[in-house]
Image 1: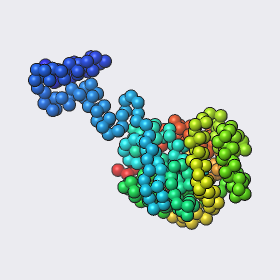
Image 2: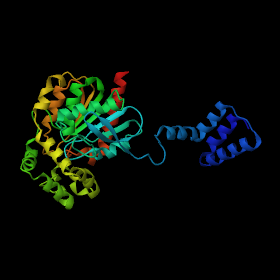
Image 3: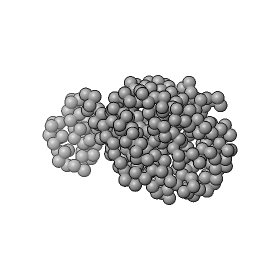
Image 4: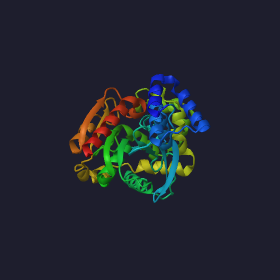
Length: 353
């Protein structure tokens, strides 16, 4: 049987193709039946074997169970930076905000792994990132760390995505290193002189008065405290749906040692709008294609700040609102958000051609 006839037969057989390919391979081994490389490729393509093999080798399996995110770390001048990585393709860099870590982006890492090498970093003073006791942990230093991080991984450009204080850090990074940004996506975040936001100031005052460790311990001991209106509840549209495991993942690293808690305290104490104001002139020249997505029910960052960003970043292509969403909607409304990311990234690539 010639390869063209065999290929036609396999395509017609559908589910039985796996059996046919197995018979073919046995026949080749036992009888010496010969097919050229191009003919074998044709047969493999008909059964999907070649595609599955290629994808498996590249680490991007499109059929069956996807590979899980890998936890890694890399040494930089700012410390040993922890991050999660999943997928292949152009790099997308996700930046979380205060109290959280790369776990915020777990849905994006998996769902978008077919089109991007997704990297979710742990900021200085957060997650599993390790730093020296005297390391500057301000938001500007975090933006500098992102540059060092990309250099260490030999990554030239990224699709940058930021949320909360991570969105402010992303603005500083994009304004300072515009050549490293393929596209920018900002979700509810600090902007202009709204850093820190008014609704977060009581938490900062509590931390400044020495109550941070006790508050973190209380939220870990009783996860309902984390979800309460007095703590992080207002950050979620449905705080009751956030698992105990996720709360543990976010907060446990912050109390692992006394030094880690002190590092977070220093991060909070360094909140100041001088950091965003310092780069504002450069932000107003940013040409990178920018998407701004905002929740309409955010007590920390009013929708007006999405308009401010859209009006002041010349690269803005779209600004849209998620009705009723709150600050951590990338975690809660990830399917809706990921759809917008896919469209934005594709549009940016098309624009660059």
